[in-house]
Image (cartoon, rainbow, N blue to C red):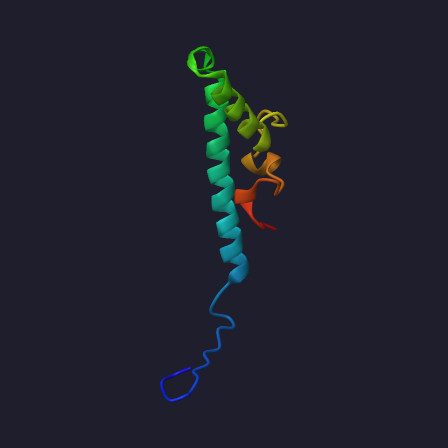
Length: 94
């Protein structure tokens, strides 16, 4: 409400494409998770990391990799293939 009790209504129909904004947000989150997943997978492929890191750190990286779909990945699949909405950062992407 304005200072004298008035309201201003602005029709937004046709000005905002909420579906496109949602899709762009989902694509950005999927890309972020794919980069995160690849980072964890790279650590797990690195023999120096596996040899030098504390076992609990390696276990944590493995758990995160599994959560991000690391075990279910298929060679050459799109980064979103393993992201089915289970990961909390993905949110409510359609």
